[in-house]
Length: 266
Ligand code: ADP
Image 1 (tube, rainbow, N blue to C red):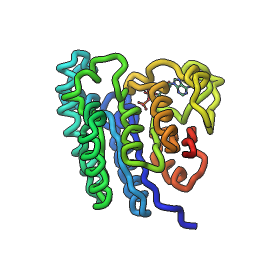
Image 2: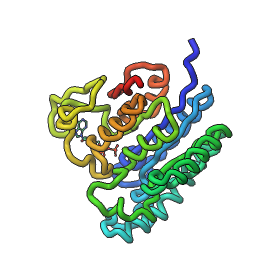
Image 3: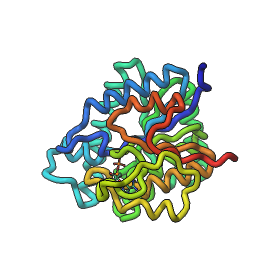
């Protein structure tokens, strides 16, 4: 049976794109590019939301540690965004795909006119078979880098905003963990994966711990916020592990992978 073609947004976090040493995880980036290209070859439309600019930039600049001041974070983001797009262009290019860079900040979504321009740009790119790669404009939107509660929180919420804007059928958030558990598996060995969640209420939020891994910044709470936003607009959201991007093939077949937050039937 041939599945209906889908518009899918895939979000990938810093912890998937870099390794333990903070260097680019080339094998995963290459695999991700291959799988997403394949999924597009099957007639689907693909948008990638990618974090990682600050980490990749800090590494490229040989900074001894993750930058802490705003000016250094923004400088690292400017260097890293360029490196990251170079890598994506190279890997997607090998699979005969063209990518485009879209950098956003909060105002771009709040203003009606900008929002409309943005939607038109996405639609034009997708019509042309281009894969848009989206990131927060970290070198400009300092309020988000600075504040504890960054608006887009390592792009989890940004990926949901993009899904809604583009009326996607599916949002997949690739993380450093297999899905959403009944408690933080890094703290509790007996944590159990929850494969489907119908309603993201306060009892679900209570299961998410604080901010996530050393390299990631969002944690599960911001993934829940993202799923909440997308599901409210009828968009199914899946949280799963990014270490094996081939899981995306199973997701496209409708198989059970990670945690599915069911979109409201509207
Ligand atoms: P990414 O960089 O992929 O966005 P994060 O490190 O920001 O990943 O968030 C994932 C982390 O959230 C997990 O590694 C885990 O330690 C933490 N976490 C907290 N509560 C939960 C939960 N209930 N289920 C799964 N992970 C959880």
